Picture 1 (spheres, rainbow, N blue to C red):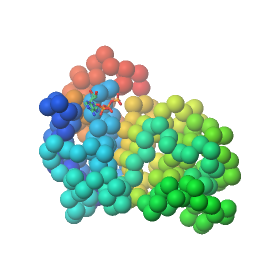
Picture 2: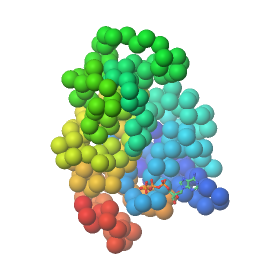
Picture 3: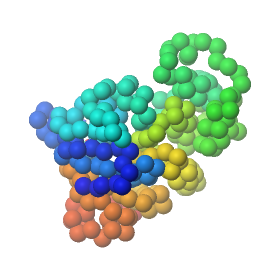
Picture 4: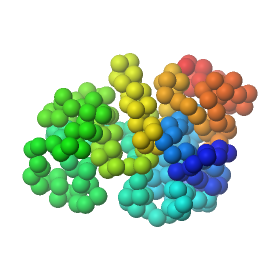
Length: 254
Ligand SMILES: Nc1ncnc2c1ncn2[C@@H]1O[C@H](COP(=O)(O)OP(=O)(O)OP(=O)(O)O)[C@@H](O)[C@H]1O
């Protein structure tokens, strides 16, 4: 549906069926290099499954995924991660008994040998890169804290910092502000705006107030297909979107 001028990520007719039921249907996405794109849609619209397809966690039934001029369809989750697509899930998968710094060290070596790293002696001194990632995600002051001591917001930022440690070009985020306080939500919005440009960021989000703060272009998924694309204002006045969301809390409560 969309056609970015300089797309870093494109899909053509992307479709996945579970037990012959289409959950993502014929999705043509075109995401520009450095873009911050938000994907919204009601519960069950297929948003998480779309991200699962983009990071190779789920294989498409039909269609293609292109990273610049490379067809990455079906190359597998690890190869997709290596090619520069990083995914942050809603539930943090940090190592709770390790410090923030140790988590970052594990993450930056994750592509090498994750389990050896967990049990190996990790360096006590942060590298320049680890400091830069921690500073960017607001974690510099808690580098020596165990992850179990962090607030919910800090845990989410740590997970994002771990994704950043792997130098992704594209970051996929599933509801990054879910469960956060108002202050943490504001900081997360600032962080995403800061990341856009140097990274391409795709965000699934339910909270329209948050979406309005961060977004330039929104893609609306409905029953697995793209229903509309545009600015927050265009989307909120789009007749098909209003009809699809009638009675839904997602837009009306925003
Ligand atoms: N592995 C699977 N097998 C069968 N059905 C699945 C599978 N994964 C997802 N689904 C179904 O696909 C549909 C879309 O799910 P998905 O989680 O992608 O939606 P979503 O838009 O992210 O929803 P939410 O906002 O509630 O997280 C749902 O009906 C879900 O039950």
